[in-house]
Length: 268
Image (spheres, rainbow, N blue to C red):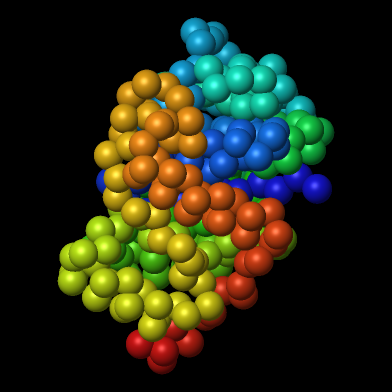
């Protein structure tokens, strides 16, 4: 059964696109088919996937909005036949605000009959709660929050959970939180250990294990346009194991119930 996952963070610079392509690489390594929909005008996932020149992007898909039209924008990635993409471009930023009624449903409609062709669909959201993120949340089965073990991690996670809660009661009643993945972790840093413990205390049922370690292999693989799973280094193998575990958790549907904001505050 196909699963569609919105990968989001309302704070930039936490490695959200790295987590998206890391999960795509885990699917690639396990012989699963995956579609990456780049909903971020920065187009980092598009770049990492080594997408060939293209003329039809997500901006065009959202402008059209017809059921199934997303199929017209799918292109093969440079990773091989099992990994496809709907690329982004800078012009996609113009779609982040809209006054059109039901505009948040355009991505979901455009993926009608398309998402089911893949084992996994990943929606790489921009780092804001605009119309593009709302479209991704409306189209997803699960929402995966990405954070890093820094000072703003707890606040960012709470804001993202609030956004998921609003989306699940308004534009997508079937949306569930997949959990919180902590990225770019340096195990030897006391500050990182403190922030991980802080997040775990606040959201004991949502913080996912394992965390994703900070390794230069991630950037090296991205620069080479290949999955980190294909990069030959000990650091890449460590990151690969973490993404493998994360992917299996997502596909198994091990998603916890989102606590209410008031309950989360009481836990803290």
